[in-house]
Image (cartoon, rainbow, N blue to C red; front, top):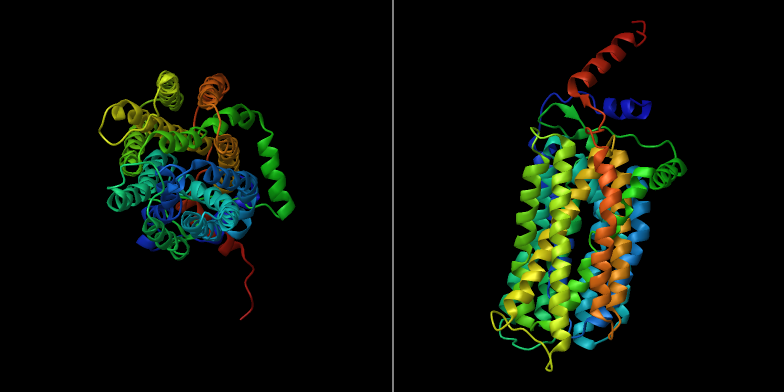
Length: 464
């Protein structure tokens, strides 16, 4: 065990009395509530298709800006959060989301794009801090044997945002049988909820004060200087394992931009509102399904990983084949294709959206779990998750930029999603084939207590 890790574990001292507010469930509750209020509401807007706007192109450009800045700042935030603490990183990350919602509101009311782009830029920067911190908390605070379960809890909270938001959308827009933008009241509700993220984030406990039910402690290994912290991140970025995982990171959320355009182009407002409500149950279901496999200790870790990965990519590849067939049908149609809820053709077109979410959320959770197994401590995990989310955001930047072109051929997006998904299979399989056990350094409360006793007994005694 490295020296910095030992110091970090010792500084907290043995925990003599366990407070529920320092427990793993409470920390996950805090992180999940912030996820509900900030990215959850962001996803709810996205679930309407193009942020609820009538035309997807300007909002797609704004989202490309969000993810472009997100990609840059998320990798850096993996190092910065280690210096300032995950609590403050999470709080910083919650600031930008209300501004993004306010930007969409002004665009909806005045068709002005200036403030929308400003809000998108601030949101992109803050989201980098948010996701680097959030992912490290959700994966790094729980014990390795519980991680997939808590990931599923977090994914459920994140999905609950769009579900509540979708129910709001549905109630406010149920009578809109045509394509177009949603009512302004929808944005007001979302912005109010988004503002709650910052105060909730400040309830998070520092890692050294948190206790686990199995008696182990969360180990941190903060570098001595800022320069050393950034050097550690870029060294990890160039490692063989991360390079092999980059295609999977890049494609894991690439589908999101196309889904937004698909909904806006082919579905009425109330159909999109229904989608923003119901589709998220697909992610909840797949999250717990994949968690039940990944946390099953009776199956070897490598076998669990391979079964999960093959299942996910099979579903995703199937959706893109399905999308190709439907898109050909839509392009060949002599009339504009628009689906109202539960009317002719709605089922086959919407089911595709459902399974994109089902497979996509399972894939994201799986990748979190994989990097969690290879991280040695919370600081290492912060670096891993910063890179994971940063590269994923780079993929979304490209995806949203493609959707910002009004005359974009949908077959290009479908082909890229299909091709890169297939491309990621072989390098990811190599990484999974080398996974034999969790790499986390284990420090128990008993170890900390013994170290404290040794240092106390060896300390020089002062004369009376």
